[in-house]
Image 1 (spheres, rainbow, N blue to C red):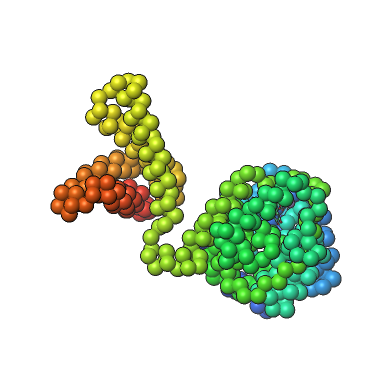
Image 2: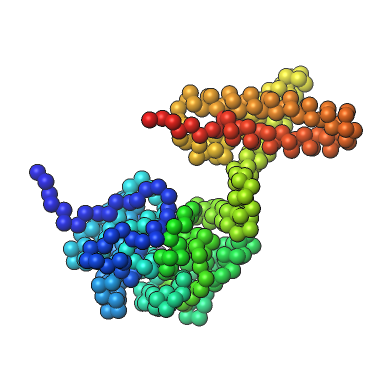
Length: 412
Ligand code: GDD
Ligand code: MN
């Protein structure tokens, strides 16, 4: 038995998060419509009907027939996508995407834009915390030529209704931190954390985006081709239904996002591109190296003091423990993207053995360099040791990158 589905759900695009310059062919001979608004949702069952109704009313009154609403739901356990889908018969401009497998607010928004037909792309929270009427002001600003229009809590007419002192403090603290790390992006708007904005398709088309976490506006300003920005004040409403999804994880994501943008955009980004050196990976490798030093010294101390083992044995055992420690962290963190594609015990063991051999070779290399510098070139022995360590860290990183965590995607 087959059921005829009049309004099939949109399936989520896969691959790079890149918005096309032109939307896929439209029916009716038009190139595109004016406006596509994404409503990202996760467990917003009790809000979605209201949201769709209010937004439709507003948009019908100003740009009837020239817009679409796209709900992008990350397979909410409460079945938001189902409720949204049931609205499609009454709201023909509504489209619904159910994403299965991938999760995350920023990604959801971009996935929606990828299938959007509008010349102007926007986003609004699905919980009515963003006052809907502000949308028309934002839209007008972009129609009149701004590249980006942002709803802001920190300009005239803006605010938060009743946030606790702690939440205000955290929000402002995050902003100051961002200003320090990434002044070129955070300094351009008064409310860089806003999730309520519209942008010209042309300003972000064909650019691969790499957002982390919640704050997609940072990504748009950081990577987009954004000249003119307009801000419109709004008061962040209290939630009436459902609950916020913000946890401590969002703060970590935010920090990661800042650092990623710092390293890949602007001066530093251009320099890194020219050098073609995986700087982020190298920094992680360095952090792991430091943890290894701690492990090495601790185990050495325990073996000597508590087990009263000989010097050579203690040295070798503690060094090997550090190597195992470093391998595990590098495997699950530094090179996670690569190791996750080569799963299985055998593959991991192989990586570990290579890592081990390369690190041991590094120790020998270090001894050779110290000798060369000290005995032949007459360099001070501590300076010699320091230079040798620097060279060996680079050696360890580079050779492991090329051998242990090499990408071998030749499977059929
Ligand atoms: N698809 C999808 N996937 N939607 C999500 C996800 C997700 O993983 N996480 C949250 N959402 C949806 C929620 O359902 C809601 O519609 C919207 O994204 C915002 O989430 P909230 O959990 O309500 O966040 P908030 O109230 O703390 O708002 C903060 O973040 C917003 C988004 O960046 C504030 O900073 C807002 O100004 C900002 O707009
Ligand atoms: Mn909210």
